[in-house]
Amino acid sequence: MERLWRNLILALALGVAVFVAITVFAGLEELAAAAASFDYSLIPAILALVSLSYVGRFVRWLYYLRLLGVSVPLGTNAAIFAAGLSMTVSPGKLGEVLKSVFVRQVSGDPVARTAPAVVAERVTDGTGMLVWGLLGALAFSFGPGLLIFFLLFTALGIAVLRSKRLSLLAERVLSGVPLLRRLVPHLHDFHASSNQLLAARPLAVATGISFLSWGLECTAVYLCSVAAGADSPFLVVVFIFAISSIAGSLSMLPGGIGAAEAGLAVMFVTVAGLARGPAAALTFVIRLATLWYATAIGVVGLLVVRALLGDREGVGATK
Image (cartoon, rainbow, N blue to C red):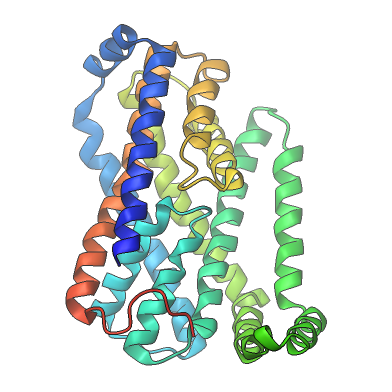
């Protein structure tokens, strides 16, 4: 648990450094003027929409666990899901496998059985965001080729995760390495769960939930742009948000910190036509309302889970 807090503090320090860099990019006076003219009355609506998007993602998490036959009390499960949001600042959000560690402490199900739910979340999250980005690209002729490529790449990834042949090959390779032989049963569980969660029907249901959840978050981001005085159309803002989020994920930096902010600030200037001050202020607000709001919820979730479960097994075990 101490390592988690240390990583969160490091991510926060990186975030502060990036905010300082963007302030230099915009100029302090321009940024202050943009912040003074921001319509703060829209903040409650923005946070409400983002919160609803997390409710949608929690429903998806419950759906995945039900498919896997994993039973966790609803209140405890909600705390575990919230705690996972603290890992929003991990590279690609893959640190959310922490949820599987907590689930094991409650239900006894091995991490290898439920970790594919986290992978499936990332797959359907990425697909849902790509669809929104594609809508923006098609509506404004921004060139959908790159987004289509990522959709095809996602489809290839799903095929790899579901491939029985590749799973058996990996098992044979691991079986031949004494130090890795103990991982074979976990690999079998991982493939079985992945194959179940990424089948056509669960994939369609979960992607639909992801699309709706991202729609709520995109609407929140659009309200941020309205509050900042931008007059960009909804789908232009969605396109900018989608591309910046994808850039952040591909960077494999904690929470995409640096890459996502750079994408937002630069694209709000070059695509939306904002001055640097408003673009920087808008970038700050969007990241506070998405990344750092989620992280704050996650910290509260971690504290609740720690109170419920204690440190009986720690958070580093993965069996």
